[in-house]
Length: 288
Image (tube, rainbow, N blue to C red; front, side):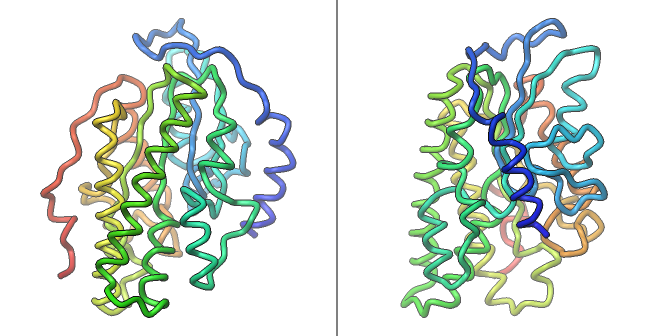
């Protein structure tokens, strides 16, 4: 079903994703200012797992995902807000993760591809506000490869993958800035997926691997603060570890989870204000 939705969205959105305009500074914000919000993500960006998921590239005003909620909030008070949702279900950050998935026996659909090649080139030049949520599919790929490829040293393998991922994330930001130099960029870090319901029945050793991956990726997102990117701290919000806030698959957020995403992201996206992500919260060390 995800592949069908993706194909339909790609067909519908191909023409829309070829136009770019003139960048506009995102601050100061006012109801009369031209605002254009672009979202970069995977299935999260279309609200997959919510009670009202969207087709890729669709406006979807009644959607229950965090991107759709954020757009609704940005349009409050009569503001006119342009929008481009580039999120592709199944996508990963970079070619490096795409290749790792193939080598581990879990190839990613070519239609999904990666953010750097399939999403960044289509960021409209008029974008003033942009969100990036990367890492969920990547974390699953890295953790699976670490368990399945008989690597000599799992921590060393994971840390090397995380370093490459961080380098690729910086490349994504650079490409976005080349397309929309004045956009306010907001990046969401990851929850500790080792504590998500879909891994609840897994052995502790597997949860420990996922924790190392998820915390490592989140730390690379957090490091973007040095590059003038606002970072939203999903990792340390206790609400994102409650099973009730997940979809039935235990991986994607449900309506409650997406509402938390939007609540945490709105101050950074709309107002340019948020707190620095924590490096000491209990959620970083759920398992040994």
